[in-house]
Length: 168
Ligand code: GDP
Ligand code: MG
Image (tube, rainbow, N blue to C red; front, side, top):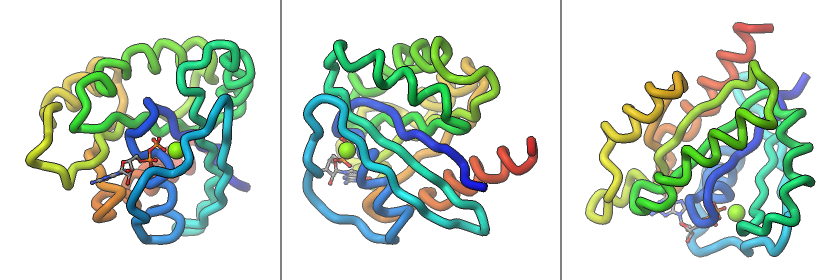
């Protein structure tokens, strides 16, 4: 049995990089092709006997593709919601993402909030405690990750796996 997982968040927050880090244990610098329209990547990764089928998409704010993406929320068991600690807009948009998730995802979906790019301390604009506060408000777990150094990447997926196993 595989866990259907979706990575969401603004373009550029590091969704693809995080998945590559989780899947292959490495960081490939530079932007991945930002998909035009609804592009998606599906990756399989096994971790502590849990298989994750992870999807990512970048709609690049193209509303006409929204109805398509909404269908994917329905099958998701877990959602990793990412922002970039060096981007205030990506953090501010988390509320909008959560609204969309609550509208379209299953009620019992496991959500985890991740503040990515924690290695970029000098450029940080979103405080750790702001991430914590927001997560608490929505009752979701929170972690800061770095797709570059790998900090907390495995832990984030592990936490999701544990939570879902626990429920099964
Ligand atoms: P996506 O659009 O959300 O899939 O974001 P990408 O994975 O394409 O990453 C966008 C940019 O941020 C790329 O240049 C990545 O190399 C960079 N990036 C992603 N994650 C990290 C991270 O944790 N630390 C640093 N320093 N750069 C990152
Ligand atoms: Mg991407």
